[in-house]
Length: 264
Image (cartoon, rainbow, N blue to C red):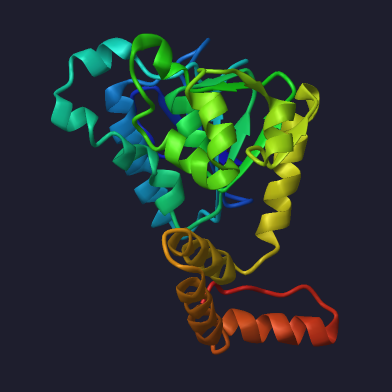
């Protein structure tokens, strides 16, 4: 069942749909046909993620665009009308999927440019269709990406390929993104929803606590040294040993049954 929630009304360029049965929330960029992202929309996006993160009835979050495109990018005039101080903080809103404790899946087709691409890169998984084209085109207007896109790409695919994308404002296809390790999976366009749902169903089978823990460990580990990250992982592993979910998982494994997770 798809439910509308009064907590998510009057959003700029966004629509939130919650499947109460599956406990999956969809955040839909809703300004077709290109789903251009406004400055206010960025702020709303951040607040929506915080609400969904605190909603115990939501386990997975999906981000997608209305229609044939994910997003062609941000509203350029909005940048021109904003102060330098405000513009310099844009990345704080777009990092919302990364900071969210729950798994976040981007389901992408068509244009995925600028801030749309940066938003995707902040998600945990990117399922893309063969109609997808990614780009960070800011060089064409004498600018650079400002919401974390170039830096996330650098961590994800290395210096050479990041420069190839960012310094040339080059388009890359969904298939190329998959080959480079940007996209989790590239599928035929008519299979996008099915493939996204398959991933969601898979993730729902895991312990919510274990999912939250490994996401936090990986997010922190990428900003520290190898040995410090291994120590961090070990500490998290030790804490999970005493969790209810771990006990339930071991019990289910021994009994060859499906585990019943409590998330604690």
